[in-house]
Amino acid sequence: MRVIVNDNKVKVADLNVSAVGLLPLKAIIRGVRVSYKQDSEGNATDTIESTRYDCVDPVNYSTFTVKVEGKPIITPEELETKDTPCMIELPLEQVQVKPWKVEFGSATLSISAPSAKLVTSGKQ
Image: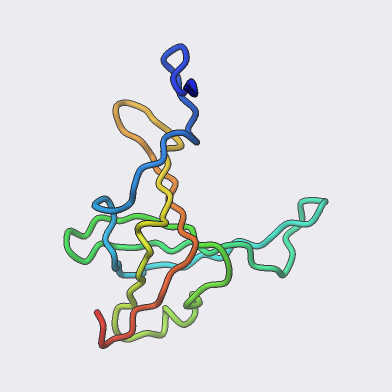
């Protein structure tokens, strides 16, 4: 048997939580931030490593940020020029939710997904 809890402590990597029931399948995108790979000296390159989407649950208006590997499905400039809200669809079974900071009974989460889809206007 693998030891997970030792001295009332546990590694964050062992605390994966399912996103099913925690996050909505579809959410409104309110912001897009791109992260670039760094070279060996720590300088940013032109290669996109991941994209962070700031999202809003359309049912209860709660907010969250999800990190998705690779290029953005919509650029910040495209999002700004849209007249209607843009929605993102996440593969919830594959989304990783991990706490990275716990204090005063509340956990700040790291949410990452392997992919995301832009929801077309007819499927919202």
